[in-house]
Amino acid sequence: MTEKYDCLRLDHQICFPLYAAARKVTGRYTPYFRELGITYTQYIVFMALWQQDDQTVSEICTKLYLDSGTLTPLLKKMEERGWLKRTRSKEDERIVRITLTEEGWALRDRCLEIPAMVGSCIHLSQKDAEDLYRILHLLLEGAIYDSEE
Amino acid sequence: MTEKYDCLRLDHQICFPLYAAARKVTGRYTPYFRELGITYTQYIVFMALWQQDDQTVSEICTKLYLDSGTLTPLLKKMEERGWLKRTRSKEDERIVRITLTEEGWALRDRCLEIPAMVGSCIHLSQKDAEDLYRILHLLLEGAIYDSEE
DNA sequence: ACCAATTAAATTGTATACAATTTAATTGTA
DNA sequence: TACAATTAAATTGTATACAATTTAATTGGT
Image (cartoon, each protein chain N blue to C red):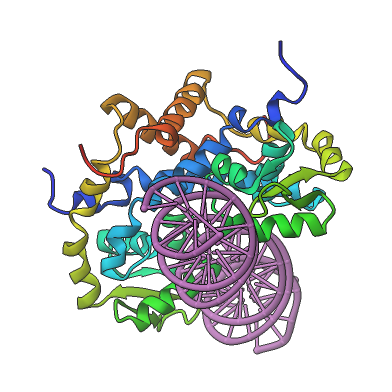
């Protein structure tokens, strides 16, 4: 017997478990980050830059699905810490390029074990992990439209 | 040919798509919430209370996977708006019980269409949606342990 | 009954997120 | 060439998250 308000149950929506699981999983990284003095958001900025150095703020925004309101202060803080350099482009003064310093590159080796450490605490079957990964990428890359069709 | 640093690629970790997809999906609710004057976090507090009124702060914390540091100020704000009442328990003065007001209950009908509206923008197959839901619940309810085993 | 340990909320401090606006630079076009 | 439109970052303001601490109340053991 379905009820009028069933659609408003916490356990009947996809958004809530997504929101809660994301916080739970990213939270598992925190203890490892603490000894490195970084945060989760800084970690993904590092990952973007380790993968490809010298990117514009916009490029990093796009890759991380974040906006300049979040990234600008974060990048400034990371520059103060000596991990990266913010350089306004000569050809187009609107653009700020982000490049890692030696110190920023050095953190890479210290993070190397973290994904496996966190991964070992997450007990999903190979198939579930692959499915989760695949479905999340659907959500990120095309499954969400601006309006119903 | 795998590379030493492959594990640190943004697209090789489950945490990042989870984090990004969660923000993307909850962001789809925002336009609907705006006309109601609520936020996503307030919405899930409402869902918890519509499902069962008169809960303690701890009970809500547990259900929403949030802590009192997040919920206490949120609940105070919602009380100021007239949506709920915070009442310290007579039997145990440490406990604060949360009950909805008429106004809080009235919002329920105004939210009724939102899940379907948002859902219609998210194009996942029935099977993918079910798998996603199932796997996220695994993560929330048991698949994550304190240490490797 | 005493009091250390525990528990429930609240508080404090730091770090995001993101909408909306602003600033400064560049582009496109009449 | 002017100059409106666009673009890239930065800024402003509001709302979470969450670790760590604090406060006040209750419990459990002697």
